[in-house]
Image (tube, rainbow, N blue to C red; front, side, top):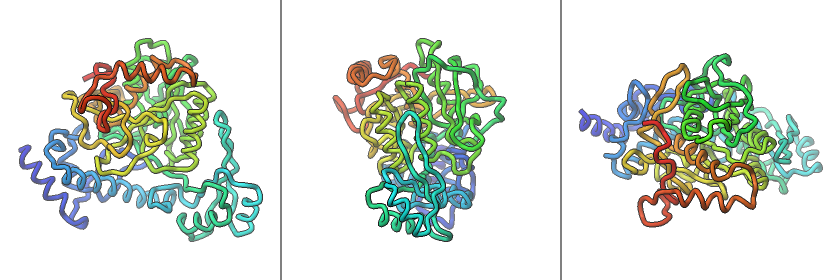
Length: 435
């Protein structure tokens, strides 16, 4: 049976797109079900039909070229369907990445340039300020019928001093049925105050669950938020299970809410600002997307205030381009390994890897009180963040080197001797997660 499923994958990988069956993937994106046109049978073979978890033994049997072809088609399919099903809210930016429809975000723009832009037909829809990060930005709406790509080019000619981008959308970096789209009523939210929080989570909302034994304080940064999500709940449970001192809490920012265009760069930046205001030393982000001017500035500003940011490298495969925010300078990129300490074949390597942690053969919380199998670099990142917080309990730039060095010393070397591009400094939190 396993052999038959393997050969089915190989056949379907190389079928033309028109031949793909229209089956559904578990939700792994922002605020919406995944693309209607998936890679079809190949996906249904790789994913367990009950749990939605990736069957890793099948991925392990694929050659590098076969794996890259499969994961690339899955990535393209995810984006294409998300754009089709939410075309009233999102569109492609100048690089072809999903972004909020009709919105350009400018940072570092002067007042004369704003006036020129308005005179040219652009409309200012927001003058924003991010508390905690001291960042200002201006949002312009594009002119009727014009694309983000063409409008960005025109606005850039007017405001050459500014950095201008779309408000890009970021997807969860998981390969299990734990997407941000899987939400519950607000009554199911894990709630309370986390005055002693030492970790921040930027993701979907967190549901109540017996595995989450630390205080969780939540705030929404998208329409309708906070709304509990499967992905955010699973990550919160991993943080809770890996904490030695459960009196310390978690700040959780829901950047998706019920907004079809949730998970955007502005929401992430504002969430970072909230956490900077609360002086959170370590923040974990299991989301992936493109480079973005506003997000880059927000990351840099948060780091300047002593915040350490841990991010998943993504699950688009070894051939995927660098993913952000993990690729930003100073962000600690995390990959996942299975119980045999093998790197997940779907994990990215173009994005710099600093540490590895369990990302397969582990279990976590799911809304509704269930416990589910998890797989993906999404679930490795919070384990590293939890251990890092043990070395870095409060933001202090002078203490960062000592804290990171302490984490390196507890890491178990994997792969080539010393630091390498697959495992970074090695495996952290080997026994933290439930199996």
